[in-house]
Image (cartoon, rainbow, N blue to C red):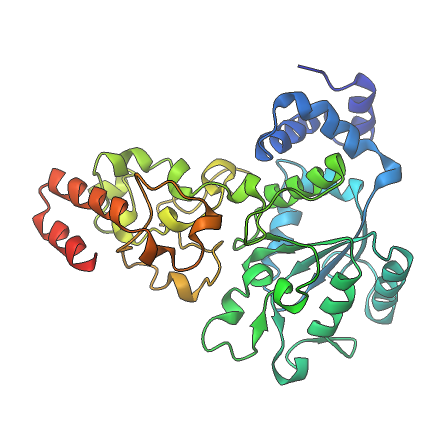
Length: 366
């Protein structure tokens, strides 16, 4: 394995990042991007190039600021220390010192100076109802700002489910007519990083990929990078062994739930949700909902929230064994189209546990 040059490690130490943290960051980024560890020196070199720092404009609209919070609070990897030293953050309402007219002037200058060369990051959905009156900044609607900023950007990264698919603001009856970034600017190059909130490691990895290779990572039909959304949560879930053994938690707090058994019967949406939550996790890799005892609610899928509610009703039809499919092939409405194998497994498992009533229930739903 090629080593990272000693001079590079000393440079980051001088910036306040220990060599241990920097090595951890580079190895985590390589792992998240599904690259071999031999790419660590190349990632380190890309992070060190001062003359290639990409200008970034971070916009926020219909959002709870959870994506900004998730990114700024991450410390392992030390995203703030490393990424914010590596990019040139020209505009971000949450962290910039300027306010009011000064802030808006900074955005306009950045758009003009770096036209066609900056990266736009958008957090939150864009309300389009009432001619944009539901969300305005400096007299401009969110829709107008999105079209101008993203339309003149080299690329746009939509962070969080609200920006990528509309999210909670777009749930029925969608009173503000909330739209995703791609719906508002269909001709723009948009990378979607859904999740509620966005996983900071995936955002860091997307930026590192751009710095290392000069382009955004490969994406599926929904614009999600394959490195982060190429596998179902069910495929890598730490409770998968219990699913295969027919061991399910029947109610929250029962013996199976306390023993860490599968949460499928409690409504877990992991079998139809594409995300790397089980491997990357949240809170600096400490945990994630299923690990903490709550089923996946499918927040990274198109149509969330409407398509995933009620959260605690067991999936009647989901893709599974014997049906190898990708997110590109499945898409919306997958539950109705890819039912048989998983349903059959559910019946076998139920009989394995002599749960005749549950088996009959599954058959009826299928």
